Image (tube, rainbow, N blue to C red):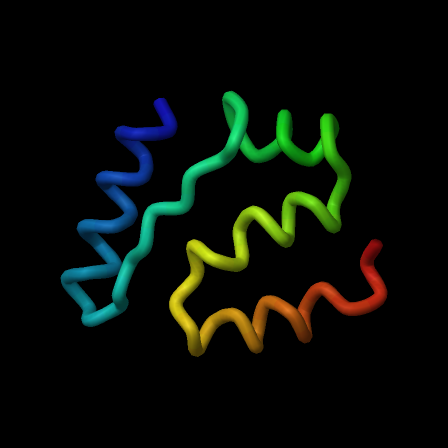
Length: 66
């Protein structure tokens, strides 16, 4: 279901000029990653997958939410 939803949503986003990047969890899904390793490890694993301009926004959004 996740892959099909991603394909549908990314097609919609691309059609209106939004760049889409697929992110990959280390385990089965991001919830598994979060539960197994915690929020800081999840952030660290996701950060290299983000576009450079998005890493600043992601860092600012996550402050204080440990």
